[in-house]
Amino acid sequence: MNYKTLREANYARQQEWDTENRITLSYRGNELAGEVGEACNLIKKLERERLGIKGSRATREQLAEELADVMICLDLIAMHEGIDLVKAVQDKFNATSKKYELETRLELSS
Image (cartoon, helix red, strand yellow):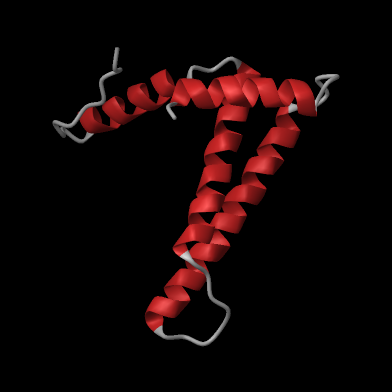
């Protein structure tokens, strides 16, 4: 799987899911916030276990599922707004490297 495959699958599934194209940017933002919150809750539980504190637990597999949801939501927002997320990530990563005089840069693969 690569990013292009994710975008194509997200597009196709959204055509099935939201046949009247009613989902808004606000909905997508709230969806993303919810998924990030779920991931953060699992991180808290993993850290609780690492620290030996009593309470509920989580697994790395559960965290992986939530992080996948976050990535899917990010792509849906980018798709909704016509943003090339790969290019945006590359530009932002490289701008931060330049700002802090770091050598590592991202290059788009062909």
